Image (tube, rainbow, N blue to C red; front, side):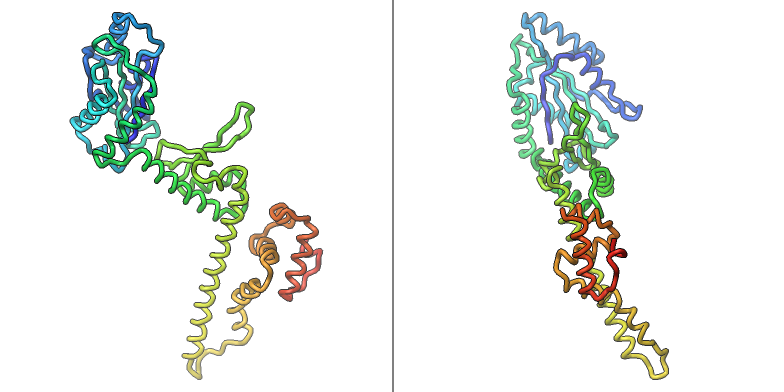
Length: 356
């Protein structure tokens, strides 16, 4: 479970939101618990709290606590009864020291993005029934400590465990997205992540420029800075990360292709060995085609890593010389020379004009 507790000034607006919540035009809020208030709706209950604040003689800038408690999906809150929700609320309020104060709580069956993740919103008066002011010092920290203990005692998933699991999932999927991208640019990265169920939200600075970004699972309301997921995903390092990931992807793809060709070769040899004397004749040039790609891959392995990279980017990935030069931080003429030398090693005759 996760619980957020913040001090609040505008109780009337919060009460209206809690009671009148809609998702896609459908009401999703129902009152689930109240304490020492008797109004027929949230507006009248908040009015009672205001009267108690005035009678106490205390002038508070923020006269309310605004609280939200959200179970994780693993806790199957969609199946909780009203009594179970009330048990969580009363336990939380007692541990927070706010059980002797006026309060009204509403249950929301869905989130803003229409996800079926039940949660509750509470509005609590910071003046208790004895006229004492409830301290708001470190209220969020206290709330985290309380809900963490409650979660552990009830055998539920803690916020820290949920966050850790989500960050690990996002990291894995973001790297998978990078691995399959031919070239890196931020827009393509956003699209690739979406294919893996990851939402990318750019952080726009006041001057209108992008400054970092956030990632989240598409079915979660929690998002994380890229740096908290993996520093290799930050703007300053992601280009290099993409190069390394895509390189590994291509190496694995080549190995898979080699395995496939080897299987084809073995199958071909088996067919040849089993062929009857009156079988169909296969000319030598046809046999050569069977091995063509397999032989090329084997030949590439004889090149130095830098030479092999340039050949693959140019002829397998169809990159331009200038793009390869930018990636490798080399002069385009140097890349051409390396490519020409590599092809010569492969005994492929091409002019420098054809290479360009």
